[in-house]
Length: 168
Image (cartoon, rainbow, N blue to C red; front, top):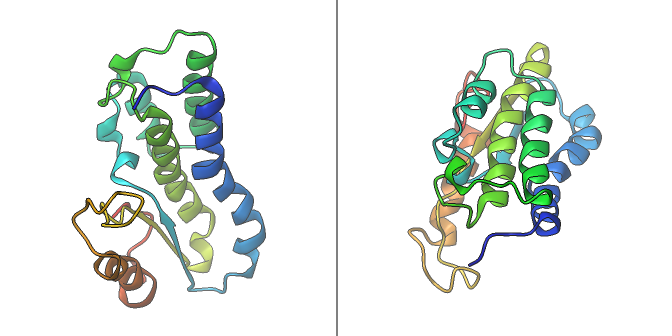
């Protein structure tokens, strides 16, 4: 798999992150008090996938804002566009970096979303379902589809309502 182009990176980020922002505009007003929202992220969404200290610090600060996340995405896309991308900023040397950027943004936005809906006691979390054995993974994976469904079902049905704003 070769590193992505600017256009490919933009599309991957639009699908895996920007679409969530559009969806939340329509869905969040419909969620009742004490409701639950689950963002499906990935293990790629953890900051341990990032080596750039500036972005690690900025994305892990307590007063994280959407502007920080958008700046992170813009930094990545601009580096692709200007051919200044440094594979040393990421753990995978740039192979699936656009996907990693999108999922890190999704994991980060979960914390912001939680703060925004805190007054309604809505539980918003993100999770990585693990590598699943599917046709898309050519049968490779740790979990069957049924096994992979257990964690999201637990998070939206049985988890304590106090579990909020975390990446599971």
